[in-house]
Length: 227
Image (cartoon, rainbow, N blue to C red):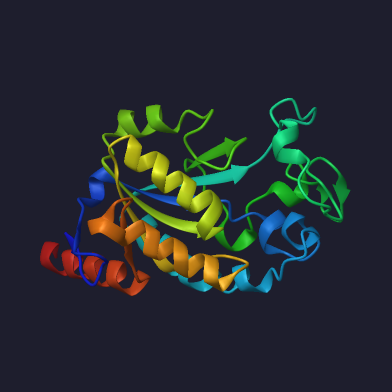
């Protein structure tokens, strides 16, 4: 299968060897009252990508493809959250503090859940990650190796932080990675634009970027050929 209209050139992948990775679509980042808003951000920007993410997720599930959800989260005692991460700026709330949806970015708290619109189904992988990247201090690479995964399609937030970090980690580990442009977002539009340019620069030094419609069209075409 080829995903056409990708940047900087067509992205080739075999669905059976590709996983859909959904980065940190959590209430703490997406909904009012969470960590994202406590930092002074307009969370509505992130919520706007949810319908496109839903369409991709539904199509991927229909094919039986591997789906991986990540959550940025920490142990209740914050033993995996170093001061270098927690003590930044002057936010209204810090990681571990009690907010409207429970303790911020703490495992098991309501705000740490993935939003209902993209909630994992039984059997789908959920990775709790203490860092920005999906590979750091997690078992993700072992899971991908067990399933014979060689390519990753990314969605989620935020583009310039956890999504980009995860894509760079994937690139260093030998995976081909595609980011769906309309299925990722930043609190700052300029940061998203800059990140997409960085990913695709120099012949795709980090990976590829495409609209979700290109992926959906390629999946539909393959289904038509198979049928």
